Length: 75
Image (cartoon, rainbow, N blue to C red; front, side):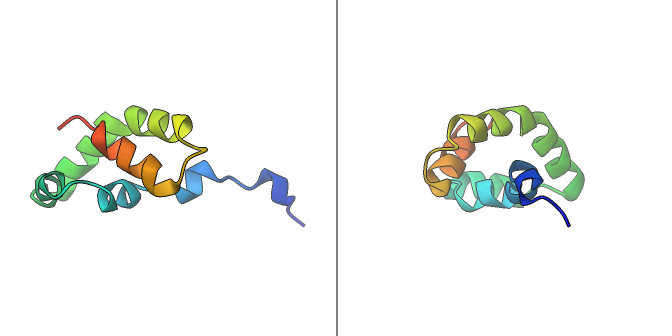
């Protein structure tokens, strides 16, 4: 039986979709115009920033965290 205390939370629940859902419409248009390779590179380029935003905002409402991360992405 698996110990529930060892269940990963960060790695399994945080996705780029959560950030995208909380972006401004202009940001979404930029993301929508990217092909899969461009989007992968964009996510990789911003992964550290997103992780730091999540860690800093973990005690806030999830939408606040995702919105904050989206606001700090480098386009």
